[in-house]
Length: 230
Picture 1 (cartoon, rainbow, N blue to C red):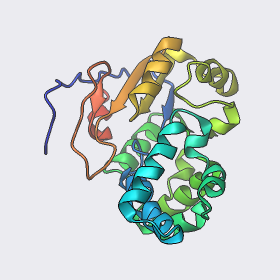
Picture 2 (picture 1 turned 120 degrees about the vertical axis):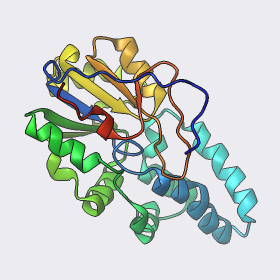
Picture 3 (picture 1 turned 30 degrees about the vertical axis):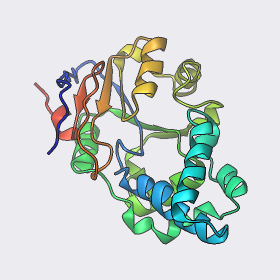
Picture 4 (picture 1 turned 45 degrees about the vertical axis):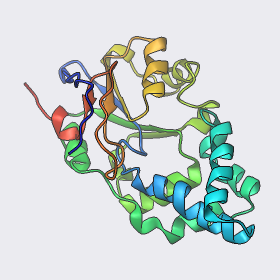
């Protein structure tokens, strides 16, 4: 496994303190390979064919479009991209949904947290249609007490304004809450809001990518690293 030079900040979660878990979906619980393949390879191929372009040119054009919406609700809005690209994005996702997979040890971790009596919430930027497709394929939905899409909050998780709204919505105690996410910008926004008992970075969101530890946050490769009651 190729591990970058940034040294891992090892997590230390006190399960006697933590009551609530806020868990991201894509890249954190589910293998981000599906999303990377879909948006970087499959959509460009379909878009190129529809617009009589080379796949290379289509990829460059789509990358510009994607980057223009980074950190906004449109970034994950399937209806927005269907209109913008002239493609039925939900239908295309269903054609490659066999690539949707749960990360190793995620089910073990969710069962571990259930056994400890923790409140488990999914907090995702994913569009509701994406959520429906992935929960049906992965069958992890029953583990969650609450599932919140950022569109319900009105802004993306990368926005510090997201976190006070979410706190009011879910009524959790920040210092007794753990947030795990594979996007550092999300953890930084949560950190800016402040008060979380634990912020955990998932260092290998895709099974096809190398481990990249965060220089700022405790990092894990797999959730088994948090499964200790000591």
